[in-house]
Length: 224
Image (cartoon, rainbow, N blue to C red; front, top):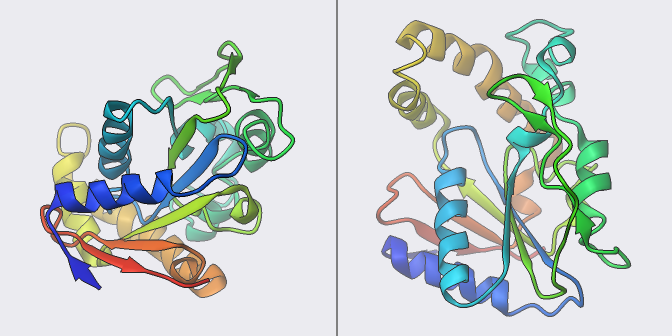
């Protein structure tokens, strides 16, 4: 494992994205627990790639949630519900990952749901250049429904207890500490523990970014 500055790790990630030749847009998964730092890392990596002249498609699992009325059949704090009922993987594959993959027509939609207003979306279809890069962040990206759709797999690792503190800070304007802690300790952390035991995501990826200290992340190359 190698510790570096944030810019050094982002540079290495950009090199990893550029090192593959797949004949279709490169689909990059950035997996990890809630509040591990996936979205920030994905946004920063996308910015680096754009400065290098790459056409970047930026998307997230939050835009492939089921509507709220459908995603809590086991209860709002159910960990298994978080894992099994929250995300529309069929739509994700159909409108984004498969069109950008081998044999795809590169005509894609980046979202099917707007979580800010709890409404389904149908944005216009766009066409990706063959050398585009999809930077996609989210939870549970190494699960069986998705595992074969990625050309580069990255896992952002952070101690689960640390994610609670980050979430309290991140959500302090919209939720109380008690609400955030309950959601994390009853739903999100147990769902990640279930995922770790069931899928072993860190064993399925190419790169682990240990993000306990965001300004000095640690790089670990994994062999699949």
